[in-house]
Length: 394
Ligand SMILES: *Cc1c(COP(=O)(O)O)cnc(C)c1O
Image 1 (cartoon, rainbow, N blue to C red):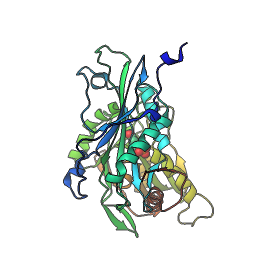
Image 2: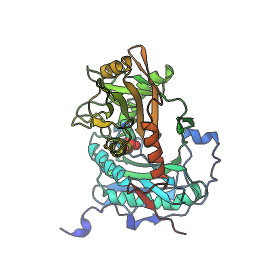
Image 3: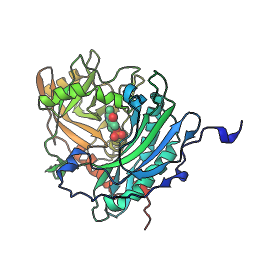
Image 4: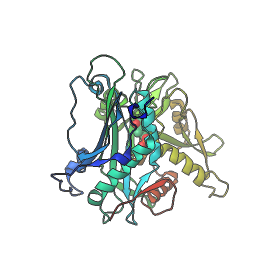
């Protein structure tokens, strides 16, 4: 009944900022340490939560180790979820986030799935803005347009009880790291990642996600369990696992990216297809995935576009049998994977059942055009209501 005793919400307006005693030097772009993804900026934002009091005031603190009991829920029972997003330095000097509320809302869904506390996604977004505003002037300077930093909001159960239960304590932290840009080459007049990604289809004994599981949530538990198959793929010279599901070998995702195929139907019509977000929850609803669907519909499916580009954009079940058949009959025009971390990458090969399906990169220009459009939006070369400008003081 007393308002004061109800648990406090996450409130970005109560942010407390601590000084950074030992700011780091920014690394050179060719520093090999950058490739290790261990290079963080100076600061992070933290907030903790417990069941009675709710959220504490968020704080900006130096990036560094966090304190947890060995019995902490996240360490023992994988009560953990996270987000991945980027902040971009545009050619006009401004800082942009890409459809970031989607990530914040998705983080709430992931948190709910794994019994971590709720928060207002708008407040999380305000905290993300604040961290970008503080860190970008030094770490993403205006004289380096076209670069980006990767943001990792993370929520963990910090309850130290070894009992198997919903955690009654949690910690939120938001930090940023350097993320190397994929090396690129010029194909058909546009830029493409060096050689194309090579995917190895998962074995029938390995499943990433299943109906009722956590495949649609961004939780650490999905990743640890995928590492064994990933290791097998790497050992065989592949880059990522193509996760298949079910006896009909449906394609779902590749590594931690969503996947699209471009093919011709038997009547010769072009289609871009990606597996659907169905009630089974096998697929993570990527921000880039939905953006590519929307862009492709806008750019390629109207009657006004160039006949060669015109195609239908579909969310539908795709089986390996269909991919093999389209390859055999010369109808497979391209495969590409999308996600915040590495954008849009062409797939050059799929290993499946001991055989290799070669995919021709550059058979159509759709991927180049989509990549170009996304890049223009993110770096402010094209107006779009998908971007959220971070205001920097001074
Ligand atoms: C994060 C993630 C993606 C890509 O999502 P984006 O929002 O586009 O970055 C795809 N699949 C999995 C399993 C992921 O964890």
